[in-house]
Length: 395
Ligand code: SAH
Image: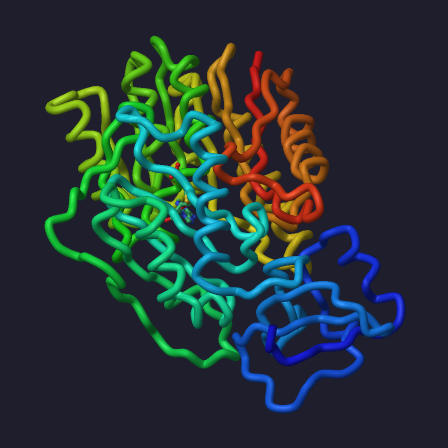
């Protein structure tokens, strides 16, 4: 192994011995000259013992660990990591004719910090969150082809908004492989949708709500459903299949409303039960009549993207949930979520509790929800748990 070296301060190897994959800049004693952002470095303890190998980056997290073994980060490394990620998805029963959309790589959850790969039918969408992953994109691409074989026709690289500013890499979106004759329709639990990996948010669809949408389907029968923050309409098309009486989808983005209508149409041609509205959530909720809906989904964007925003975010969750409690019909069900990583399960639950208490409704928790198996949480990196949800019964 011929990588440049980083040496840690005394005792700073403790968290690495417990396999935590980040090395903060404060832990670094000394580093070789001329380190380039994104390059692979070997990390040693103050006693000069090897401890990890990872991607170097300027910033508060200086190294993202790729391996705790003294190994080369070469083609066989990438193939090994991607095969192991694929095995996990197969074990979870996520790959079939009925479901060809899944997250293949979930960063630290797959021992690949800084890398996201989502699969939509024949297309893989890669997002790098670190310079190291950006630099490795061609090797990742080759490993993907080797691991997924002929089932993979396209690899789209989409990192214009996820790469760190300091890296100064500019915008870069491109097909690394294929790009033609692509099957544009992906399938989730037998329902079709168009993932818009070029212009859509994140990689084009939120696969992380798959299990929660399935659960919603079982609650939808005969209900009047409001899917707030619908984006591509995921919860709406499950509610339709679950025999909802009517489904209204709301999102402030007109692009999202277009995508929702398109996805409803490919599954339920000419079905008059569905309508979509481009409107702000709070404005829409203020107009809702009491008893108009008896199933409401609240899946807003992350209200807090960093610790400093937690207080305001909790106020936001409280206000939003209170608006739903005020209007939902008696015997109604609310599916409420937070995808903010920095908001803990307990804090979110407390915000929802405060909203319930404020409105005086009697509320019981039926389910406590989280992210699905293709968004695994590395037990040594609990920060990877981000999605939390509650299913509530409102008397
Ligand atoms: N529930 C979706 C994902 C939601 S993502 C799914 O299952 O895929 C969050 C969505 O909230 C985005 O589409 C964004 O356009 C929308 N949004 C953000 N602020 C909003 C607001 N104030 N009112 C309504 N929608 C909003």
